[in-house]
Image 1 (cartoon, rainbow, N blue to C red):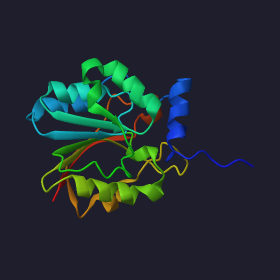
Image 2: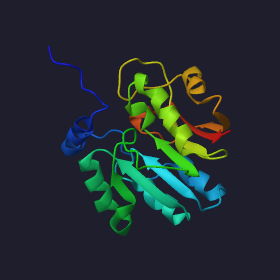
Image 3: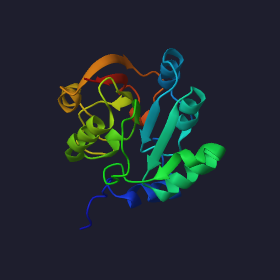
Image 4: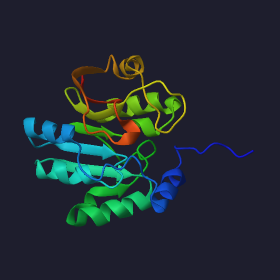
Length: 197
């Protein structure tokens, strides 16, 4: 009997990118992020972990932010660099958890499909890494996938699990439903803004 695929391994994602099986790929910038950028002053350092094709890199750059994006799939990196053209050098091939050259502070970290891509056992390490990279008043913002299904990816979080992960290091300052989710996430995404305390 073969083992279940392991979404913590880069080949898991590279195989899917190569096969064109990417139901998480929005092919653009979500409306909630566009609205956030319109009401947020530009400037500051932004990190986008698990950036995939990297559409949001351009959006943050255009809003005046200094963007660093990363993915640990070489295939995703190649696609992001092709898509972004001159901004392709903003994307690096790295493992968010293992790369110790990635240091903060960042003013903002953008989340979209990165947290739910990893099994729940990895979530506390994700939260710890966010705490390391964001200073007080730094923000973790993005789309968070909610639900209770045990099998994934994507692995949804319940609101209670989200609170347990981020409090007491973060305070939830904005929370609203997402109207333009992809079918894979429809009706179960929230735009949330967490501020480091």
